[in-house]
Amino acid sequence: MANTREIIRIGMIGAGYISEYHLAGLAAAGGAEVRVLMGRRPDRVAALARRFHIPDVVTDYRAVLDRPDIEAVVIATPDDTHEEISVAAAAAGKSILLQKPMARSSAECRRIIAAARRAGVHLQVSFMHRYFEEVVRTRELLAGGKLGPVFAARMRNATPGADWNDWFFFKDRVGGGVVLQLGVHGIDLIRHVIGEIESVMAKVAILRRERRLADGRTVRPDSEDHAHAIYRLGGGPLASHEITWSEVQGCDRFRLEIYCAEGTLWLRTERGPLAVYAPALMGSRGWFLLELPSRPFGERQHADWLDILRGKVLPDRTAEDGLATLLVSEAIYRSAATGREQTVESADPLQEAH
Image (cartoon, rainbow, N blue to C red; front, side, top):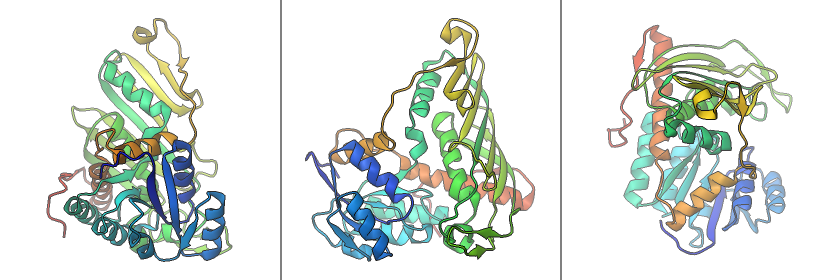
């Protein structure tokens, strides 16, 4: 969909935790009018709508898709609903911003991509971390060539785990555990910043057998809360990836260390958002904390999406990237089950989905 109008008319499907990020990002970006908010809990939906000045609220996603005034939708609902709602949205002619993980399996991802292609609508998967200023600058630095080739990287995703709902912890709802819910952020960043992941050696574990939610309920997860993976990337670099839902303090969304022939980059560590040790690049030895632009949280991502919808910039490949993160995740699970290194399957979305 290319729309040269300044204002894009949006329907928000989902009123949970992550919906506030999208609503705030759209407000900061400007040029969008969220006309309807859908959620299952009328009290929460109404309160959220008032906060973001959304005129209409509904409890059925079909009521959003039936509206001819809605051009695009943000889908931020539980993972087991992504395929159903995305396919229906595409059939209704709505362009889509779909919350990660794209779906519960690579097969579901392929069916979503196929539906969007049949309908001729733009499909974007929301990987918020790749829009952080330190990530954007890191890609620029690596592309500049002065750091030389990447030899190794260390990615770390660590949080205490979700406590606001129980569906995160059950395979039938999300397809897996911490790998799919948290680790896909790190998988996407490694692919986005460094390169394609070709093979995986991994272990996973359930170490917290019970979890207490914010509403007082206790759940017994059937999916992993810890995973460690070693990736071999195209061209030979190795990357380690630590994923956990049991660090009380957690890290600040992620921690990434990149080791190049001519320098080192540390993102979101104790040294700051982006620290560089690269004498050839910086002109002297020592760590340098790079200055980064300051923008409202979510503005860059949502401004980019809106510009794609207006036809001002070319569509991205985040749908294919969403599929790729599921294929890496599935290789992690195969490796953990077999104890052997696993090749990551092709991310060709035209491959038959079973």
